[in-house]
Length: 239
Image (tube, rainbow, N blue to C red):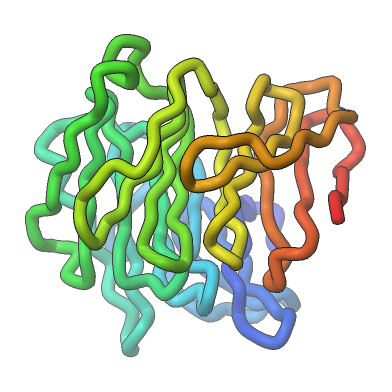
């Protein structure tokens, strides 16, 4: 893989393979073979996320508060700067099939883009608890159209109805990941503990072992195992 531009994320490519996303927005196969060229508009990437089922929609978070969506569900890929009306993004998520993108904004609201990523988004207002502490967490889609929003509190929203399913005040987490089975989410509930919660906000399990703040949690495709990462800690697999 190239040393420059730098790899920032992986996108699934089916049958256990993956595509490497680079910080100039180009994408390459694991052997370094080019796949998608860098965006025609210069874009400086801080991080990236891809749709979990197929990796065909990738969202790049920029260094200056901009967000670029790449839609490769049909070729050639289409790059779109998301219209955020001057708001500052805090976190982004792509739903598993790539048909929706959620951007958490600095006022605790969520900008929800569906299919046509150039169109104005649906805005979901933040809760009072989220606004009081100023959101600084993560967001994640489930496979059945739910969205979890973490930060100073943890909120679950049904995106089909727009109904808030639960809010757990004081449950802080900088990361979130839904199980592929849809009913359980993994959080870093006190920064160093991996906790499993149900949709209704009840704790199902807690796994200890990290001593440094957890930066990422990911499920296996069958939902039977979970991996967590914290800098300077061993990567931990929970099953």
